[in-house]
Length: 152
Image (cartoon, rainbow, N blue to C red):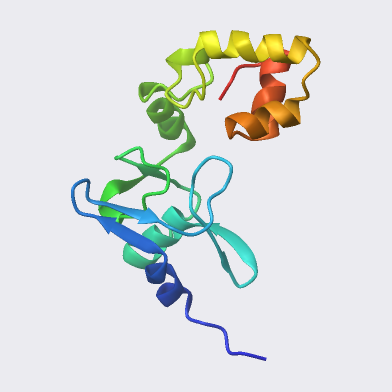
């Protein structure tokens, strides 16, 4: 059985420094929201939380937030700690909250016009899977459009 590799070494092998922005972009696995993910002792860990841990200290119950708003950034200088309330206020200030539906949400994948076209494709009988594949998004994005739940 091969020896386990040091997670700190593995961490630094999976980042790319972007000098223009100062971000350290996580180049390995991402979760559904674009946050870096890695396995430590068989458990999933968010890469930005691990970065905070190895550069600053254990964040404990605090949220690790991004000043740069680049979810895959792991530069400890771009991160800060905050409560759940601070996290929600930060999300709202950056227009990522669910209250900002449709095109007003910075994470929106489509314009209102594109959503109307997608709905026509659905009404014509095209499957959500085929539409998602054609547009390069996950199936659930098209399903949410079908249900009228938004289009993030």
